[in-house]
Image (cartoon, rainbow, N blue to C red):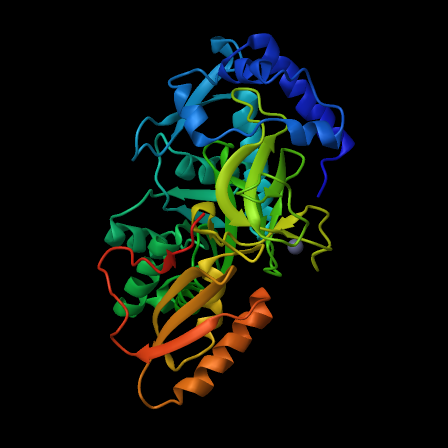
Length: 411
Ligand code: ZN
């Protein structure tokens, strides 16, 4: 999806301003010899930015307006190293609320709804983003924040909340608790707006069926406003992205080149109208793809697929980008298999090969099973792996994150 003329002009305007204020970003652009953009080709020459770059600007090096125009800061999670501080102007805060309001509208939520907000408030952007958008919509906000499940459920029943906003794991916890207490008939939820992270179909189906609600995936990250730059619609065919506020491209994380629409790669975002801290070609490390064609809902806003992982997980084999999740999805189609698998990549006789080890019990014909799985992988990804079937319990287990991909190729 090429950047259009209007978006190009908006990016150019941002670049001119960054060069003029000469903040951290302005200096970066100046050093790269950037004077502006006026074509798709020029846009694609612009340097990427990464979280590491933004960290170097700590604390306020990203600020691109005079300080008196900044009304708030947010910060992305600083679990590892220096956090990133993002300054917002009043207009940024308002734009974000507008986008979020649009998200709620796409999910069919109205000012008659009561929206219970469980994501956290504070430096990070989740809770307050959900709240500002809901207030702009005119809905009734029940601002709970995370935790305190007893009170959470009590308020949900007493206030007759109709919408829950949550991470997938907290939504699941609430769903299980409601089921355990047998109070489903006292809960009035109709919809859930879930912050998009990689979450499997199984957990999704459980939340949806146990709470009896429709689920919507919302996308965003602190560096770019926060959640609310896009959401899935009722047809659940990917997330619509608000391309009047952000321009989104998908690149091959190894080469940095744009991939054709429909192919998976890393999401790169450029803000179009942000004042406090504009970002140019920011690499999110989230993996998705542009969904080509028109959504059945008729919206003109472009769509991306649900986030399928992080670019650090990607495998490149025989020129094809593969994500462990794609293999996992194939394996999910075989109920005879355990949940464990291992992918080993090696370089044999000048060729890349992929071996997939899976576990099953002794009741199936291993050879038959292996060829069925190989055929299923081939039809999904385009090449045939070697599939080895082993007895249950053979593959290594780990209490932490099990290493499922082992790359034995020389680079
Ligand atoms: Zn749609």
